[in-house]
Length: 292
Image (cartoon, rainbow, N blue to C red; front, side, top):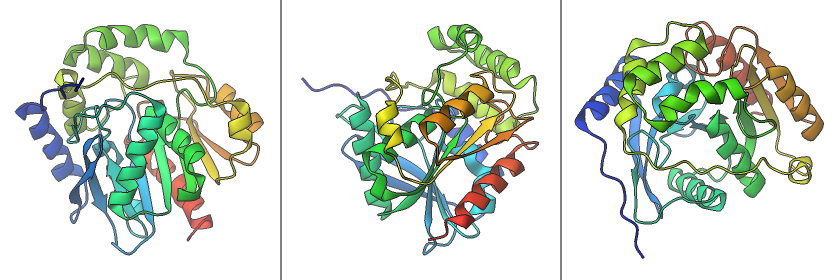
């Protein structure tokens, strides 16, 4: 039986999306539609076309636009591709074939990389995007030259119960007010970019699909992963305890590097003006050490 894709995003959301790109992304940013078996994936790209690729995956509900600070800085030496997740808020459009499993996510991302001509790429994901990135590195380690996980969730430890409790009203019935209240709580009222915040609130009405989730990767699978990995953690994250994530990551991925940004929270990353430079510097140093 063929499933019916959700209706397209409304004009208000798309206008807010375009406002963020125009206001925050560097001149020369190129929007690219990438066809896949799961629908058309929208990618915002910046940087020299012949430079080594860096693919960025956002957290749930955040859209690719959240990476503007990293794109501007890292795009000097990398071809940065920021991806809108299919089925999540953004300009990607789901097709008739739904993404239902981690294997589907891996096949989708394989198709995106094929469409971008990225046979080998540095892969970076924040939050839920980190979970996707880690699973893809386990699935296709030969395609991932370097893996960056930014305050990843569901990879090494679980969520704090308090985080889930505060997120519950937004998850059950998303509204702009509930989204703002949750972000204000988690970021301790950090001054997030106003245009991006309007987009994040507009995403409450986005016809998104239920995200694919699953168990954490097994210790055996993680122990066999040899892809160079950097894990950047938010010291004040309310999603989980940074120290516990770091301890688990060191135990499961002993070759991985970790860095803690003391002032960052889960949702100030990656765009908050106070912490974005630190994140960008950490990623840049890691990629510089692994220059292809």
